[in-house]
Length: 385
Ligand code: PLP
Image (tube, rainbow, N blue to C red; front, side):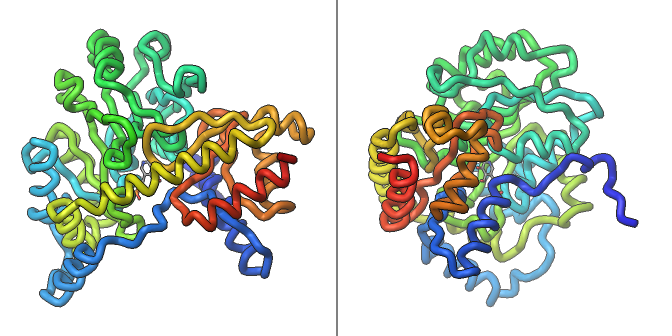
């Protein structure tokens, strides 16, 4: 019979995907369901980006590209980051950048420190690559941010990586330049620890954002910056992400990628060049729209008994504490409350446990005002506002 490899023994479909698929199945069965569960902007891909893809396809840019990406896109990323092309790799989404890096570097038992709440895939990717996630809970009262003391306490001789993500999915947290420098000061004492800075929400910020490479240039010889086209340019389906890292790591990641995908889609890479180098005033417009939605969602949630919702500084999620609502309704887990909201009240949100911080839930506000109002109305009705 069928037997799973031990390397994926505990691996499940991401809880975010499971909830989104359950919401879609309920909708397909004729149920009235509002989903606030997916990390995908509702905005369309900008027209000039779509046109660049069309032109590339007609011009015959339909063949395999170099494994690490086209010269044009690597060059555009390198120019944006102020690095050489040898320090850039293009992959099939930022997710593959992270997977490549972990597969390329982790030995069995190597530890990877991840402040929680973290993006669901971090722990699964690390485990799939044979590593051990070391989860450091970061309280809502601390802005969901990792403190230098907590980082110091989490590092052991087995620590290989620290995974940082700002603006954060799911908390929206952004570290100030001083906070980044304080974390870097801890890392200065542990030169064996590499750092992944996932900055995929870079342009979706409501307060100033500083890249880790800029705040702490001394980390550059052990820093992997992850970014991509999915969020800022509404290009989730095009599957283009990039990694910026010292050339030996880029080469190792390329070796993995060469055996998994051969490289990212040629047409999507041409589109991403247009995104990176084109007129980006649209991002400002969309950022303002997201800010208005954020304020609407935070106000609505804080009016619901048992929900305590801080206002996020970036990305397009809120991550309220829901323990009061759980207690009021007799649920002993965030997941049970979320299942009840979906099955009985027709609104899909993701439990905090999927991000390593139970007692919370994540709602995306990358949805239309109509969807947001409908979803928030159902939550308020269910929880007795
Ligand atoms: N990193 C974070 C923090 C994310 O939230 C996501 C998507 O949800 C990704 C990476 C992956 O993005 P993609 O693979 O679409 O580029």
